[in-house]
Amino acid sequence: MAAMTDYLENKLIDWFFRAQAIGITGATAAAGTGPANLYFGLLTAAPSDSSGGTEVSGGSYARVQVVAGTTTFANTQASGTGASSGTGGTTSNSSTITFPAPTGNWGSVTHFGVYDASSGGNLLIHGALTTAKTVNNGDAAPSFAAGAFTFQIDN
Image 1 (tube, rainbow, N blue to C red):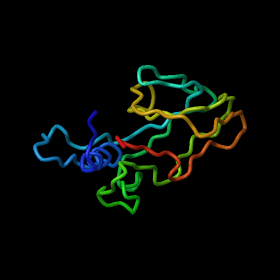
Image 2: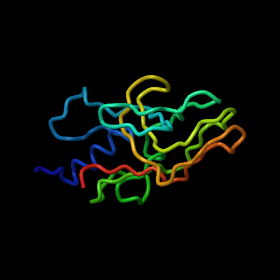
Image 3: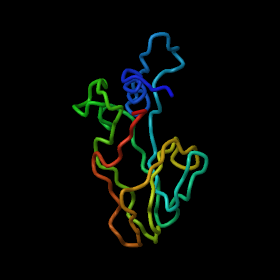
């Protein structure tokens, strides 16, 4: 089994989450920067690598757009906005991510997804919430503090 180096992990995180040029020797201009925006969604049934699970719908639900960048996702050493140089291959959201307040019952939210579009599109990353949360009409807008969404490459 092979493993990515810290160098490649840092480059991939900076490219995908932090909208930086890939910066790998020999990379083509087509590599450019990663996506300009990521869209966070909530799910009531587990997704997998080949299926999307069940995303919340109705009741004012909408995915939350997060601009990819050095101020919205931490570098891998979690020390600020500079280039990643850590050894853990990990990043997280740098600010709170808040969904719309529900105007209908959303059900038991168990998972989250990161998509490449505000609706439809492709599920790129998914994970289970630490604790499932039933979201009902009139509840406060679901909110996730800085550092609540953690993403790790390789390690």
